[in-house]
Image (cartoon, rainbow, N blue to C red; front, side, top):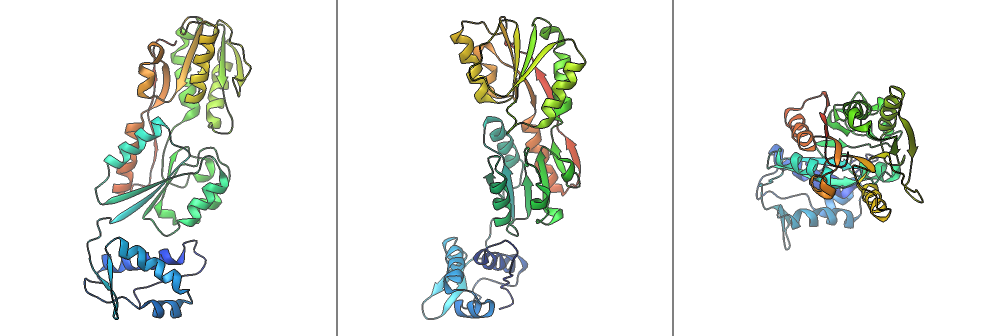
Length: 332
């Protein structure tokens, strides 16, 4: 009976605690092939659970081929072969082409016996909180992309401190955690300074900044650049009802608005890289091709994924600023 542990108020469903207990007993050697598991009634009575709760756990273990039921006798360990030795909880804000590159690079750089489960909070604090709370105790490591959500510390601190890694954005309140991140303020500022000769062809620089999703550091970096130059500037949060003017250069932070901007240019019969300039954020393969090539400011997502995997494998507790680059193409 000692192989099963069920606790109150730890944020992990009780049936999952039973599953996890059996997995731990196998990996520790306390439960071997052919051994009998405690009966459903014994577990139910000891931990004051419903029969359905215990049965749900046993059915999951049975479906995975770990245990088997023998009529009239009970449940026995069928296999000690648990391919997954470690599990990683990976929480993204949303899925897009460049995060898919990051995820693929991360996955390919891990050992085969490490399972990665990916979740998305879609910039919802409630979803962010629920996904983390529902999975406390279920994983060896938790990789969290907090995006621009505020007050994430009070949710993340529910997790074991030594199992948490922060990805992409690192807030001041989370600096005690290891992280691999982008320095959005410096990346915007330094890239625009590098492009100054090309930007001088234009009269005005426009930042398209939907505040709900974008890091505040991007806006700070843009304002820092503006103050260091004589550029006319404008910050907008939408292209709705906007008429484009010749001599404008747009800094576009998401791909949906990039598509809208290019369509508006075509509708107004404006030429990219001549009448209107475009700088996009985050490199994708498509941006090498569309409209003769779109200039991008981008971190190296493949490198970010590889380095994140190294941090997990080596248990590194460090802060790493991922490298960023300006890729000049036809749109500027």
